[in-house]
Amino acid sequence: MKRTNKKLMETNVIYCGDSLDIMKDSQRFPDESVDLIYLDPPFFSQKHYEDFWIKDKTSKVGFSDKDWEKLRHSINPTTLKEYEEIEKRWKGGHHGIYVYIAYMRERLEQCWRVLKKTGSIYLHCDSHAGHYLKMMMDEVFGYDNFKNDIVWKRTHAHNDPQRFGANSDRILFYTKSNEYTFNIQYSKYDKEYIDNFFKGKDERGVYQLVILTGPNINPNDPTWKKYNPAQSGRSWSVPKRIVNKLVGKEKASKMSIKERLDLLYENNYIEISKNGVPRFKQYLDDMEGVPLQEIWIDIPPISSNSNERLGYPTQKPEALMERIIKSSSNENDIILDPFCGCGTTLAVAKKLNRKFIGVDISRTACDVMQKRVGGKVIGGESEEELRKMEPNEFARLLVVEKLKGTINPKKSGDMGIDGWIEFMTIPVQVKRWGHKVGRPEIDKFKTAIEREHKKKGLILAFDFSKDCYEEVERIKHEDKIDIQLKSVKEIFNHD
Image (cartoon, rainbow, N blue to C red; front, side, top):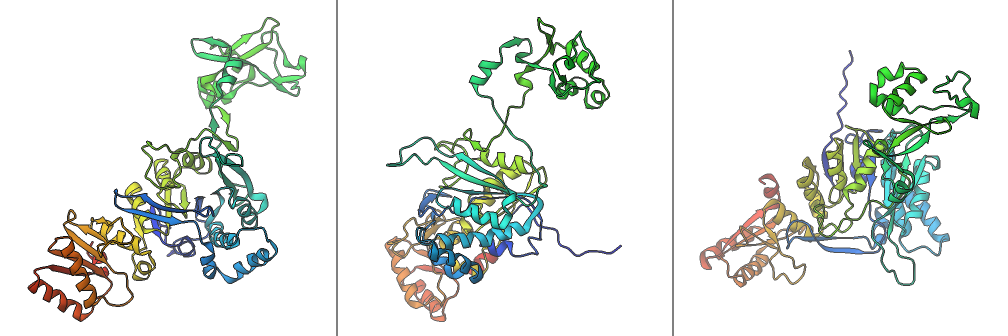
């Protein structure tokens, strides 16, 4: 028997990095390996989400959905050229919209590659770029593989000056082929419908009377209780689900139509009308509900006092993710979220006994997700990745996540203190420089420590100069202030 060295795809993990770079790794993401993809990327909203709570009341971060133009240089020139040609002709578009679409296309092409032929993808968007994304998704996944433009009422009614209130998002549902997993979901019946149609009531509950026949004549249909549906140009239609419930599926499959009708009658599921027509008592409790349509108004947004709320500004409710995951996957399937933010998709996938893979470019988000769902974080800790981080996120990672300290909430005017450790008794300064930290930085930090009326301090950096260590020793002996120097490499090797 020939052995294979093919590595199994790792699941229940969180990758830190750009989803394009992560998904392009065919060793981690083989072709057609994922059952369901949900992605909630930036919406091209032209907003900056700043200072939202993540870990504690002083650890704040933010992200921008603006300035897409600055990413133009990072997009594959071939892909970008196609959209730049459209951009030249389309004078009414927002400057940067086609950079955004090109950015999304590169990532959605990888989604198409890793999605199984039986898989589905749900792209969450809104009116800012939804129509542009729909056209691009038609190209990547195929016009015929478009299934629904789902409308989710994401918020309650509100006033938008000089236009109709914008209170909905769009979720574009595509498949990889015509053979895909889909489990019908149901919504509850309206009270008005129940009141109007479920007029009967007995010890089992409320019910409505429905006919036991269907269209087209079946000449082999038996006469039962002096009634034969062929007289009305119809045929018997006996509800299998209730028969299965009464005697089991295997026994029910061997029963004749007359035997099934007798069984239902004996168990008080059939009434005979005054004119001799049998009618089935359809109990409300036996009905699954209304097959779900593409307008979803029954899932409210996360309220301010919800236990789900983590403070993430674009966080989606778990009920929304539960509906999508139940609809388009089965237990043990692999669910991928390439823009997973605070990890709602992963949390719900885990709860529903699915395997999950999350990707996010923010190390902060990845750390939050790991605490929420477990698993492990892969990436985001190499020197190259750390140097690309925003300064405030880099400082937060080192001070809060690695040293269990508290970050300084001030982004400017912090007076040389980026955070504190050991119950805020030791000030910390973080340097993300490409060159070595030297004597001048030590002297400035010493002043900051004295201003705090402390006798200890810690500087974190990639590297320190020789005179830096000498200055630390001098300050320790002459000024009785103990400044520790710790490299970033040391932090990640001994966390």
